[in-house]
Amino acid sequence: MAKTRFIFTFLLFLLPITSPSSTDSFVFFGCTQQKYLPDSPYESNINSLLTSLVNSATYSSYNNYTIMGSSPQDVVYGLFQCRGDLSMPDCATCVAKAVSQLGGLCSETCGGALQLQGCYVKYDNATFLGVEDKTVVLKKCGPSIGYDTAAMSIRDAVFSGLLRTGAPYRAGGSGEVQGLAQCVGDLSVEECQDCLTEAITRLKGDCGTAVYGDMFLAKCYARYSTGGAHSFTKNHSDKSVNEGEKTFAIIIGLLAGVALVIIFLMFLRKVFGGNGK
Image 1 (cartoon, rainbow, N blue to C red):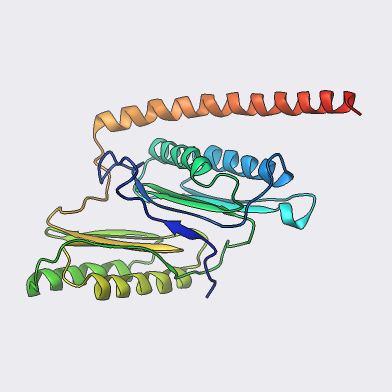
Image 2: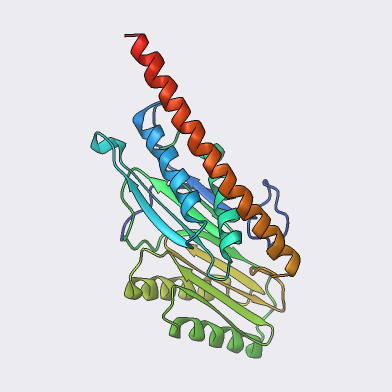
């Protein structure tokens, strides 16, 4: 199993969180220790990668990219993924928010990862695409409700239902117990099942009789909630859909503007750089 190179920092109570169900609320982030030089080819490749991720999120809920460089050390790998129940506008909004935050959180580091409630973004100079990784990134358990045989049986039945579903995104529930699980899209069906089995096994063992629990591994996660104690899905109201569509249109416009600025800056660098020789 591949070892994660990230130092994950948990700031659940230090960063503003609008509400537990908000798709752009913070869950965790991590940065590699290795840094790159400012204005280096690697920095340029990271910027190209992140722009590609934001652009791709306007029409897809998952994608990965490899940006090649003139030398092996300039290659950067990256991906994004949205929660399976998000609409395209909500996905695009979430990824744009994640990318904008990640630049500040992991400034000048060769790798970074950020999980929001609705999406996940990661980049690194070491390949991780298609590699299963069951390293525990975040574990969070709610207060214990005591050993309620009926509640625990329902929870375990929900977990079993999630494991029987072969899709990368899985959601289900029974009564007041809700469950959610998802794999990163670069895993095979078998790797996804293996990862989620590990996540759910750890969740049951580590959180025991907790009213809710979250178990995030490097390539998958599993979550549960009883009695609405821990909401992790989006309330799709007409207002939220309309706002998402407006934001979607704004993002498209911003992408076009960013592309023009990048082209203009490259032109200026070429002109003034050439004159300086």
